[in-house]
Amino acid sequence: MTRHAEGTFDVKTTPLPPDGATGPTISRYAGVKQFHGDLEGESQLEMLSAGDPAKGNAGYVAIEQFTGTLHGHTGSFALQHSGSIENGIYKLSVTVVPGTGTGGLAGIAGTMTITVAGGKHSYTFDYTLPPPTP
Image 1 (cartoon, helix red, strand yellow):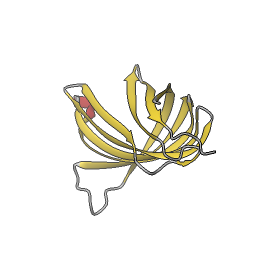
Image 2 (image 1 turned 135 degrees about the vertical axis):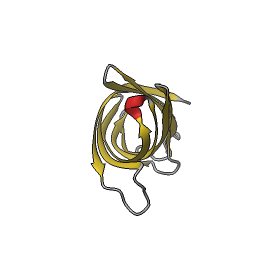
Image 3 (image 1 turned 30 degrees about the vertical axis):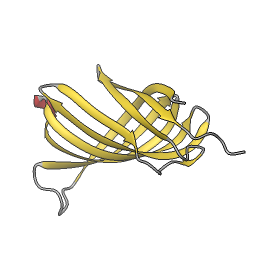
């Protein structure tokens, strides 16, 4: 059965120096998110981006590791991001990385929708968990 979670999050990113795999047009960032609402906890993320978001055209990929509680289930899981903005229109895909759930979140699968409005971030998360083992 698919479950639904929603809430807000705060994110802080820090630029990282380019490495041998990235060129001058690719930016690297580390970040920390604090989730509030049905997801309560923190995630650590790394992101690569290119383009000029101030002009309304850019793209990014990221992996983040969430640790905390989701509707009373405590554990962790990873999310994979792929996003673009073209002429100010966002297209985002955020999915749970298969096999990354631990603890009470073992076996989790799902997709997250992120909304940015007025400088505030919110999420909706549709997910499944396997039934508890007896």
